[in-house]
Image (tube, rainbow, N blue to C red):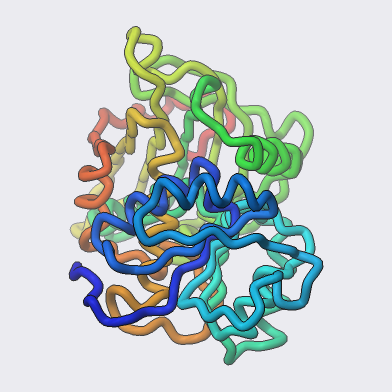
Length: 351
């Protein structure tokens, strides 16, 4: 993956870039793209200015979602990230007017109608990325890489553990609470059919990487749709627990865990069960920031082929061949775990 050249380039705009995800995304963008100009946009001009003062080549921008031009005049940009809940859809509309690719990481699976409708209204304008995969690619990209071992996949179950002491900015905390509330009805795929779970049907358990069983709930980030369609697996579900991470139970640092359970047959038709974990000792924000940065690199034309106008999941734009290397370089870890033996799964598991 090559660096950007020294030639002039329109800036990347991160609206809400002064928050935790924005800071991590900017850090990763700067690693390979030291010369790309960055606009740190915010509704709080002082906070945006404070964030920009800590980043070389960054400029603050006051954002007014009620203004047709967001208060930015004729500012040109190469890509836009919206890192908070924009209930107006103004940032996406503005990005399309500028023919700039846009990613938002906030809308839940039941809320991305606004993004889909905006794209359908101007399908030739620019790429629109439905960014609410769990930690923006940290779940789906590894799942698809590990799925290559299988000739047929019958079951995909994701078990995510979010440490209750993980670092959240105010906007990120509000988004998570909203998405969990939206998860009072959660989408799963069972025996090839889509089903909305509600009430007691959303209660489940996960097994953390240290073997601890923890109460959880069915959750439905966009990974559920992506993995079902990409693999054809008839059973796909995602369970989320919020509590003490395995590392903190061992008196270590707060971490985030994503456990990927795959069941099916290998390429010779033999039964195969695999269980992997993605772990990051920095918690969930570094992985989210990494995913945002990798998508922005593509949208801004910094790496890879130009992205044509379309409606995308992050996993469709992130380079799978280098993702695990980038993840490890960020401090993350990939572990292969012993699969849960058949017949010992708890209620709610498809694996």
